[in-house]
Length: 366
Image (cartoon, rainbow, N blue to C red; front, side, top):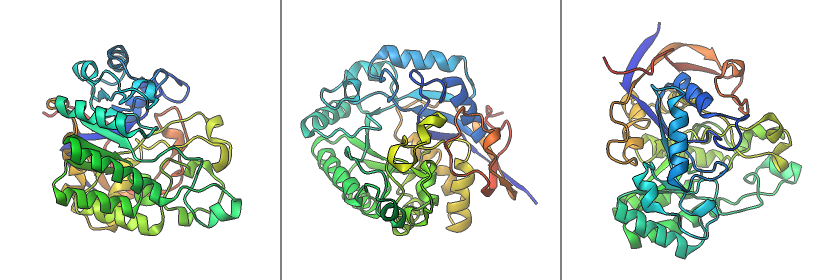
């Protein structure tokens, strides 16, 4: 027996389309096709393109490219915090906001200089815009400490690195009043810092990815770069805290969809690029983890894909958004060969999930 649900359109506030830059990994058209197939009505693209999206012209480029893609999926470009994502000088946030930037982020790079981040947050606050931070300082680590890391002699990333980054940004949030969004949170300590900041009344939000909610470093058995991402997978204890935080409404969902050509993921943990594709599996995974395993009410699960993401976007950014429909019932196998994305860097092939977007479900309300 199958059951179908219809919701306000799901929004993914964290995707990488590699356009401009690496079209063999993803174009705007293929990324939007993957979003539609995955059940999403809107996506926010990250600015770590080549060149980085630090000018109104590059925002316009992405919007124009989207016009040739899937008009039923809204594309909202985010813009850089700093020029060229180099962390040295704040970008022209005012002109980027006027051009339609969804929010500001140097995703993939942590803005380490206190002075630069404070200036950016003061200016973003004056604009009423959100600053999103990739809460992982630059590191040569490739994995969290676990049995596989020790067996292979891999450099590790301590959980404290994320916590230290969040702690610094919360102090600047407190000082500037700027709305702060923590991207792809991955540790129990990071979750607790965000929880305490919310109790304090700070304007802070955060997101969890499907892969951090499903997988852990404790379960890794092979040197397979399809399990390498930044931040790296956490422990079982981290995963439990992330799930708890999603269930209580502290964290929203976001995929961090990160396509790469096959060659970029062929070197194992030590040499491969970070990231996996996730647009076409995010709904099945988060439903399976949070609704079926954790008992999260389906309406609150849907809110973590719509209401909460909408809260960090500019007013009116998603007006007229299409709706999303999902169907639950007989489990279906993840078939990487059927993906609309151009890349296949994904660890989910062969896994089974019982909730899937309804084909063609991203469409306008009647």
